[in-house]
Length: 192
Image (cartoon, rainbow, N blue to C red; front, side):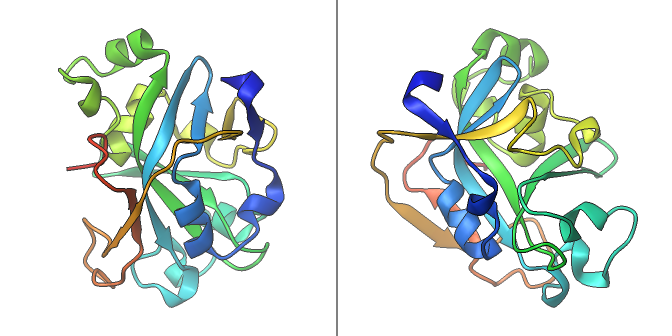
């Protein structure tokens, strides 16, 4: 996989969150010995988006979102799950991309050990909390530089062709009708 792929550089992330969210589809997320193709994302638009953590401004929790693009923002939710976001936009302007689902590609045995409840390959990383468990992504990776750490994203030289579907975001209360969820059409790996 590495010989046919290139690392995404900072300029990929230093763009509007909506563009980054759409363009993350099909890219390969790698953490240690595990990897998966990104099949579903959501964009969060910072202080203008009441569903975004950055809506209330800079706090200890959200500081990384206002920092340089191309870093991981990992947070804890519902007292049990961690969620991975990529910081987008220019430094000082909050915006991020929630990685909602992956198609598992590498380290499948390791992922299965981490997610024993998943009976099918399609269920290993079919949600934001599931994928962080499968890839062992925790709040220890919060602030990790996606261009210089063990958590990174690759662009395949010859990615498979796919159609993008756009829907409203899911699982939120505010701004829930905004069409900021992007997924690969007909992927059996998207969240349910």
